[in-house]
Amino acid sequence: MMSAISGVKAETEKIYKFACDYEIPRVAFVSKLDKERADFFRAIGDMEKYFCKNSLVLQLPIGHEDSFRGVIDLIKMKALFFTNDNSGKMEEQEIPGTMKQDASLYRKKLVEQIAETDDGLLEKYLDKGDLSQEDLIAGLKHGTIGGGLLPVLCGSPVKNMGIQPLLDMILMCLPSPVEHARSVQIKGKDPKTGNEIFRKPTPEEHLAAMVFKTINDPFAGKLSLVRVYSGTLKSDSSVYNSTKEVKEKVGSLFYIQGKKQVATQTLTAGQIGAIAKLKETLTGDTLCSEQHPILLEFVKYADPVMSYAVAPKTRGDEDKVSIGIHKLLEEDPTLKFTYDEQTKEMVLSGMGQVHLEVTLEKLKRKFGADVTMKTPKVPYKETIRTKAEAQGKYKKQSGGHGQYGDAWLKIEPLPRGGGFEFVDKIVGGVVPRQYVPAVEKGVVEAMHEGTLAGYPIVDVRVTLFDGSYHTVDSSEMAFKVAASMGFKKAMEAARPVLLEPIMSVEVVAPDDTLGAVIGDLNSRRGKVQGVVPQANGQSIKALVPMAEMLSYAPTLNSLTSGRGMYTMEFFGYEDVPSHLAQKITVERAAQHQHQGNHNQKEK
Image (spheres, helix red, strand yellow):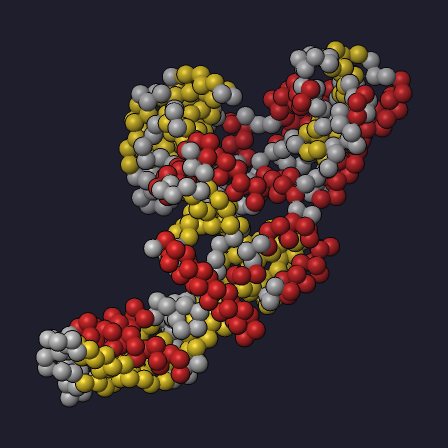
């Protein structure tokens, strides 16, 4: 589907590429021909420019914008005029005189394109100079199924103009399950051995079906939309989920027709329907016979590219939000939901701004959970650059039994990603063995909040090498407090630095926007690692700080007119530049002060 106003959009280009990758035959439809600024031929030019050199125009529009009233069928060489009552009814007439010349030119081009797909048709065309209607239909179907041709039709879906010819063309040109299996076999894997298994798209074959969509309805429960590839799926039967390795009871089967659910007893090879209330099955799972199991390959989803922190608008709704989002995750595998232990935020990730907004609208409508969206916090960390030593001594005397703990600690940096190491080098029993674990525990707790900006401390080795104790007043608690005090003192002397998460980013951009995209990545403190040419543009690999990527999706869309795509994954931590570190430290201190004032008011 392509708009006659805006032409080829990035989404159209991506969908066409996916269809090519999965060897799916295609039919194109140019819509919105009744709207202002609609231009059918500009849309065709866009299509040929961006992704398809073999588009085959089967219809020409009659009328322009408000005056659009029909199409010319270039195979029958007849004009189809539509009624204005949105009924989809049409009347076949002769081609208007003003359009006969254009129709003849496009008809000749159509015949030549179809003839080139088959040697027999080409020979007929060279002999006779034309092809019969039967030859054209046969060649059109052969070329479409083989992927050599892309039939293009046109109309206005809102006014139900051109929809019936489109449906007729789908039936005529696109393959049935049996025909499609001749060129792309139905194959899967044996769940036990991993060997390839092939199935025929017939009702008598062993069952192989896939759940491609899950719908969670608060009233109707869970509906699993399923496509049967082979065999027959029956209501009130038992099937085997080879993905989860569990049995499932199939209750009612339906055909989904808009909002209607039409009950059926069976779904056979090639059919699509819905199963109510499956317990374990989710999107992407394979349903089959337990005696003849098969695991079908499911589509690989792209990683989410945009994340927002979500928080309930009213207190006490955390559980409602969490339950609702997990139900939506069952429906949409492109969503990702995590709880960040460091920032204490619920983070929802998706494929873009609109995707996340629609998801949260569903959350409110279906589950009554209203949330706010905000940019997630960056999980900064702290570490040290040099070695340092310090004494932590905790001494408290209060009437009776006192507290005494004394620990000398040495801290030193570890390589990036080294984590935390604790070394016990006590000799002579200056710190009794039973108190060493308490020292380690005190250090670990102190590492939760650094001395620079209060972020967790990483990549540090801590060595306990000296200390003292009191036979009566020493305790685990005293040594734990002493270790925490000593660690904080040592941190201040060890030149602490702020670390930020770095993302490995891959951007695919059209050739004409390469310079702008690389320039933008450089402005985000990115380090471009390389550029690799691809069929649809250039693939740019770079390392970019996470803080600079939180709002990247809208910028990339703007730079590439929506044709750019990107993926990213965590790479590691690196030092924050000093001028930025100072700014982050000041902001963090202000947040702590604000939080402290807020807590004081509540008390």
